Length: 317
Image 1 (tube, rainbow, N blue to C red):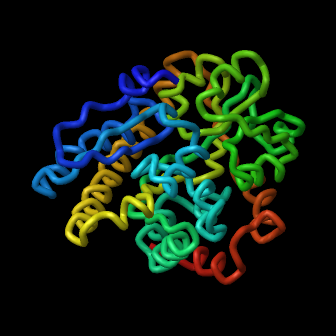
Image 2: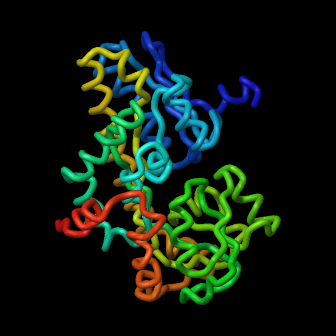
């Protein structure tokens, strides 16, 4: 991509002494981005203008795999990324992104504030050199398609796009579908051209990416209570003073709260919004889907041990 195009997609940063690059794959209209843009003012204020933030949305600095690699190279300073992508560096941290791992939002919220999550984040740092500083609610992931899906048998042989991280294949495989990894920026065209039959994402993402324009059904499978990790690259973190590390982490935690609150609100409104657009929204009995997936939770695809799984399942709000 031409450099002028990338600059055009970035949020304007003020004249801080040092401007950190924050990269992600989401649209500039989404709360992840707008809250991140607001973090620039907060960080400049907290550091007496020593540090600022410039945000690069919509894969403008590369795919999710690219920006994860960029953390260690120092080509990006901060990223949003899915837990399953972080799991490439440290397998156990991916457990929070596995299908039907959480009973509900409250279970997930307890996990993100738990000692278990802190230990997983520390393990990721030890393995990668990068630092997880916050977790943002991404939403419950649902399947979109051009046929109604109300039971696992409806997904047999369905070609479904998934993100390019192995564990995203657990849910499709459990129900007999054919998972197809495709970069996020290419999903709309893949659906439009029939390269895949379906995809899965939370309602706010389905709206922001306009997947409902090229899919007639949204099926409320709620198969992953998903989250984004905010990660600071090791080279960047190591170059900051202790005071600036503390200030940056606090600002990014506030940013996660900002986006989480916005996504919760949006999720509550979007089912009706999609119906108003003429999209069929199908209620789903999740029980059979849960039973199909649970048998795989500690199977060959698991990147965590039984003890970690048991600790997560025992968490209660």
